Length: 173
Length: 166
Image 1 (spheres, rainbow over the protein chains, first blue to last red):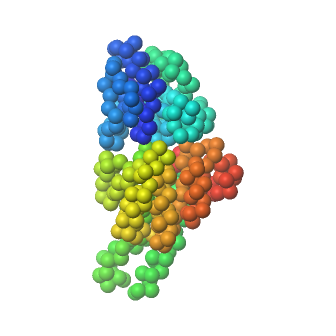
Image 2: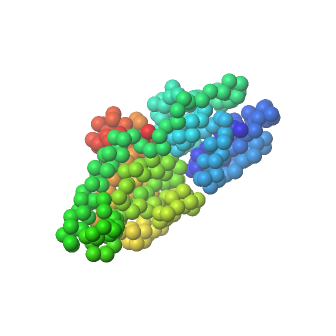
Image 3: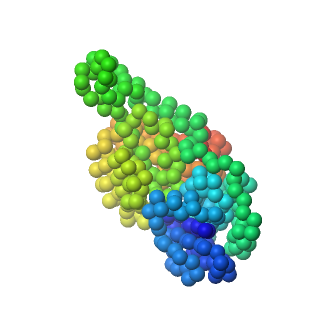
């Protein structure tokens, strides 16, 4: 099953239409699309606007190919589930986001094992066909938690609160 | 950290010692996914969550969970009701710390939370590798600590780099 998602916030009609057209040209493939608040409604694949997050995680875990925008939620969850990913960035000048940060994210994450970032609709559709013909997968899933450095630093930030609480407990004894 | 009366010896004479509280907040989508990856850092605290989708409640079952409207730059009209809601939530939670991974609707929690005495942290999204988000730039003037997840951005924006959620 191919799971395609525009994320959970903004419309991304260019992407939805591209995946729907691909589904039309590949009727033997099962495709499911989360379209968000977009105007274009798919004709060749089942879709929802948004699904509860637990269902989203189930669909993500069950899919063989994950197609999405270059959103950090999509990237992180795709890596957590060790999915083969094809990602298309939103463009600000097409009204697809408020800034071009997805293009910046695309540059930084290009070449990361498990995900392929494409520049336009024809490249997206070609990559989908290629992935179905020759599936690949990351060797390992990422940890479900942040880097140890960040965890330690946040704990350091919180430590004064714990120490203060501890002192007040001792003082009350 | 001690958070309950101990069984042996009971140095707290049967009183229940409450854990300090964190209000962990993020808009729905990628910000929320990043926030959830910080969970191990919150050990020893009682954690309540705030986000913008009803359906996240089941994901944080066992914690208090509050929904706020998603006032993005696409929907500025949501700001004032958002502020009122933030005040209600902060009033009932009385958090010792407010921690957010963004986005804009969460700034008001940092401001009001800080005024109410909480320690406040803005963790700018991993999705900003070239420049800090405009909300993050505002957060520098509000939060006790603002950090970027990209070393180059942290340096350019004069904020700390503490590592990343990845």
